Length: 181
Image 1 (spheres, rainbow, N blue to C red):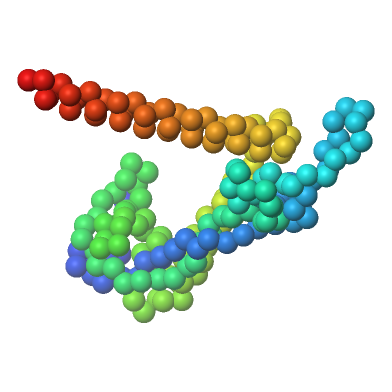
Image 2 (tube, rainbow, N blue to C red):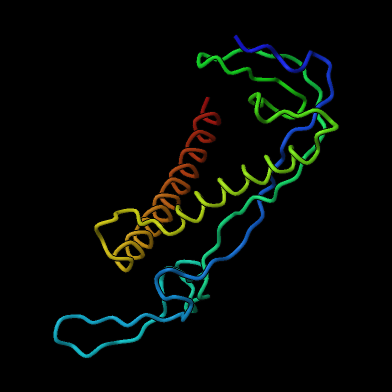
């Protein structure tokens, strides 16, 4: 059985990752802001890339898509408790969150803590970039995916307007009902 490296009340170093908005080259238009569409026997048409438009109604493409990367650092934390999870790994409850045994370091070991923070940030950044480059339906084209998302946004806006109007009617009728009593 693993013995805890730390005791309740110890001040330790833990990794910290902060999300920062960044931009990557659009995977659909490769940063060119335009795509060429070939529909059947019609001549090719160049249109704005719909994947990297800033909003669904924006006419101009940016050539980039936004994603959030993690910037690594370390910070001090106080251990408030500990437990062993079902895999036998010690988890420390600290003033900064819950951390596994391999994410908690002695104050003198700042370099190891910083390296672990960098490793965690890199893992997150890689998965975030993979997510940005994935399609909703992998067997469909990027154009289909862009069209799908535009359609879903329009439908969500339509439902929002419908429910906003229904709420206004309900509030007005409820007020009339109270006045009638």
